[in-house]
Length: 454
Ligand code: ADP
Image (spheres, rainbow, N blue to C red):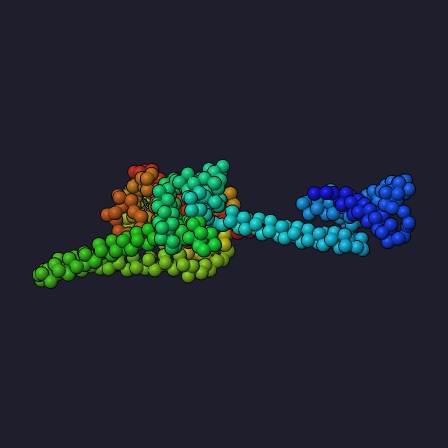
């Protein structure tokens, strides 16, 4: 195609030839056409030269701005300054430059908007706690977020573009994808990851009709729910187990009594005493269960007051002294230091101390020692109940504060296995900590710390 310069030039040239030819024909001049050419050839040359200049000027006025507008629209930054200038022109070129400028500005705004929306969505996706993964019809992973990588231990460098099998190394996910591809309906499945042993709920949804063949996976970590479910099942079986022993015993006693023991007064007395003990055990179990459930559900409001730690310790020790001595134990306590006050629910923490002393009495053989003390340590008051009893095996130490947990050696003793669990809840409600140090056959020391109130 001819450039604008030559197009203009050709038009001017044709007009000139037309005028020249028409002059003799119209009778403007009285000579023949060849004579015209011979007579006026110097003028003709000047005319052709002037036409060239004119074509050049026209080309500069029209072609240059058009070429800048084209460059501008194809995204060349260098053209934008010129466009500003051309947009001021009052003619068609000016209007075109202004429109190009306006459209380019709008396009820039739309692109910036899209980029910011894309970043926004990407940051939501990356910060979601749930895992998201999109797989196309060929099994290639298109999108995979941080949570999915965390859940399946996918290395950081593994990016979208790999297949599902390469990315998520779990056969169940692969099976779910295949089934969802075939059935084209939402499918839900639970699985356990091999590395972290986490429980995940996977929801596979076909992204029809907009992204045909693509499947969206949502991975939710339900480990905590799963644990709660296990705890609930354990709890029910523990409660049933704890109830079964006294109930079986009561049943046996009543059967023995009705089988004739009623007529034997000493045996009758023994059985009645045994019944009373079993009923006491049942009552204690029910009370402690209720107490634990109330504390756990936050239904026990703490009545906190400023208390001197030694007053608390002495009150609990005084209450337990007789019981300890009756069990043939040496019982002592020490709170000689002047300790700073603590902000506590006195009755509740006394209950904790009594619980610990009661255990010490229960698990120490006659002739043994129990010592209760309180000292100041790193911004806290640490209470300690030390005994020279049967001790706790190392394997049980971490579990001793769980509900219903009892060591094998203590199974024969009465008790529900709930006391330490209640104690831990009460100490934690005071922002404190409870722990134990123990050596089998040498004794145990239970500690709990309470922050000093300022
Ligand atoms: P229980 O009513 O059975 O005493 P706890 O929750 O108070 O329930 O205690 C749980 C278990 O911890 C006990 O059954 C026992 O095995 C162990 N235990 C607690 N205190 C002591 C202690 N001072 N010496 C040895 N074992 C203890």
